[in-house]
Length: 177
Image 1 (cartoon, one colour):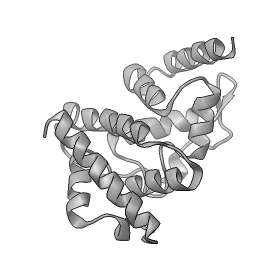
Image 2 (spheres, one colour):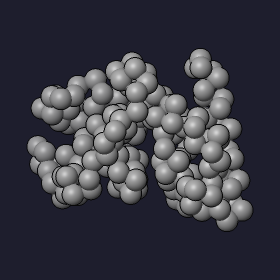
Image 3 (cartoon, rainbow, N blue to C red):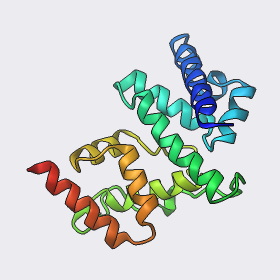
Image 4 (tube, rainbow, N blue to C red):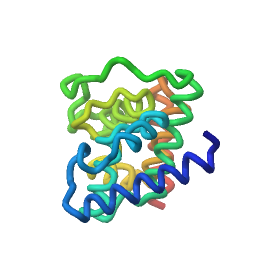
């Protein structure tokens, strides 16, 4: 499926999710049809992830669809380019993630969001973990970045956490000027 086609389909699935949510169908199983779930799988998104994006957007006003599209574009590119479209067979446990208070270079949350970005790219997020949750959104905002920018940064610099830290520090410094 070409870029325009999958992006159009994601928009349609997202919009159906919004309508389902507004009608009170507020769970991944009741929000997403089987055909929508199959499409989501093709682009490396789970029904739970779509539900989380829709739920947070309608509850908190973010992320917007363009942010969701940019995040999923990075995930899809990784899925197709790195794994050849093969689905992962493992999901990481919540317990294996750095704590919310863990620091890197004195920056709290950074180790956790790096881990979450890696998991998002690889498709290994546990169902009860969202890349782009409220804590992630606040973190990237405070660093002068967006969720897709941070995900791209991790994609481009991983596994070099020192380089990721340096880029975050530079962006944060530029944002505070």
